[in-house]
Length: 214
Image 1: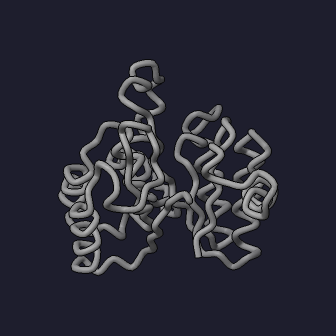
Image 2: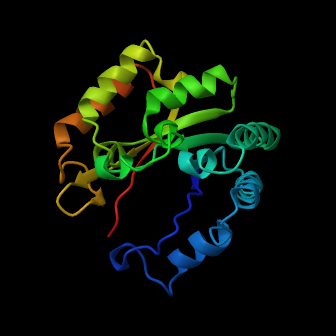
């Protein structure tokens, strides 16, 4: 089981949730989405995961790196997660190439998995790993198949040393929709098959989910 605790400023599109339903209640109330301050929201989510005996939690990397004093924040979260027995999996965010032209440098770590791995290792954040979201990679202008090959080479095929969760999800560049079933968008089914085959071959022991909207 993986607990997701991302935060978005904009409301979800109408196709992605029922505003009055249980789904919205769970995500907004139970996962403490309503509080914009990551120093309040994220520790509460980690504590909730611990109480539910959930071994890992997914956090959008931008929630940390765009906060004030992100280096201190991520160290505090790393240590708190370790204390509570909850692994932190930082998810790469989506920023289109056009949006990136206006972005601050802090966004880079939130977009590029290899830069994020560098940062975690340099700062000895040993309770922090990555969640790789394939649609977010595609939306950010990366070729997912090429990024996957770069990751394997960079990690010398020891994927689980840095990545502990995957969101397998496709992307439609025409609409910007990043919650398509694998094989129904620009990434292509073969890329997903290759990644899954490689994970099996490499003895990956982390988790994965197919993250699609209705």
